[in-house]
Amino acid sequence: MCIDLHVHSIYSDGTNTPEQLIHLASKAGLAAIALTDHDTVAGVEEMLYLGEEHNIKVISGVEISCMHKEVPVHILGYGIDHTNEEFLNWISHIQNARIERNKHIVENLQGIGIDVEFSELSQYSKVGQTGRPHIARLLVEKKVVTSMDQAFRQYLRRGASAWASRKVYSAEEAVTVIHRAGGLAVLAHPGTMNRSHAVQGNIIGELCGVGLDGVEMYYPSHTKKIIRRLKKIVQRYNLISTGGSDYHGGNHTGVFMAGWTERPCPPECLLEHLLAGLQRVKKNQSNAALLS
Ligand code: AMP
Ligand code: ZN
Ligand code: FE
Ligand code: FE
Image 1 (tube, rainbow, N blue to C red):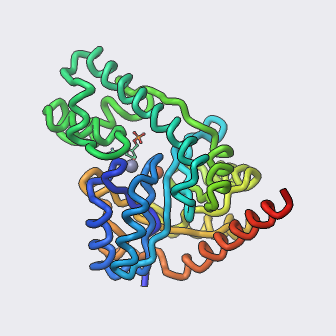
Image 2: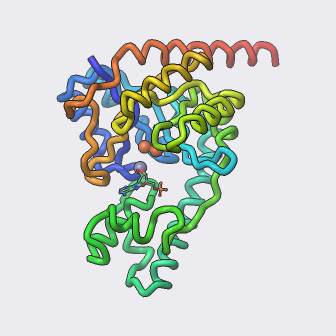
């Protein structure tokens, strides 16, 4: 059986509800799934409940956009206590920074003569964290562009005419907060970060120095060559491996949940190492509590 440890829902920039995601996972015969919305755990409770109902193992998750030195990285948090107050408080600052950034992007669009209003975004992002894919959808609907891809290329990607930065935390801080909430920190889609594998190796090594627990080994755009390279890194630093599709529903055409494509699925055996890692985190936490 296979698993999918990287999917997005309407609580960030996916287009499926947790219920729809569980139904898709169930139809694909997945053994486990993790909801990893950007900068929010709002859908996790619902997902855990639905998993029990449908007999699919659900791992709580989140995907945090952060920086390691000058490099933007995404850190996945797995098995976190989604009710942990310190974590929720920390993440609320990122959520506020998102709102500010979205306002700046809309202002930038207005500045180059595009007729958009901040209030229009709520039609595309009703319950969760609003991101650039929602702005891209708005631009498609308004016929400013013909595709979301064009919206990113022309206006929204880093450095494009309407792009705006936002306050982001360091990967080190993200890893620390994830650990304190009882989770494991995994570098998302390392194969998409930089073409130079040497540089990737260094970044992973440096992140291990600040407590990184694993890397996302299986990912739709990871070639056999990238996987071979990552396996060596995993061995060298004694990391866990995970895998997922990064399914976003209609917000990312051409990407499907694991089990819905011909591509090899992340195997169920990955789960064993993840769960063993989580046991270690829990044990360390209780040892630390005994000592304090
Ligand atoms: P944000 O979280 O607002 O920084 O937006 C990042 C999201 O945009 C990620 O989920 C990316 O997968 C998504 N994204 C990046 N490029 C594109 C694209 N060309 N079309 C659709 N989504 C994209
Ligand atoms: Zn996304
Ligand atoms: Fe990502
Ligand atoms: Fe993602």
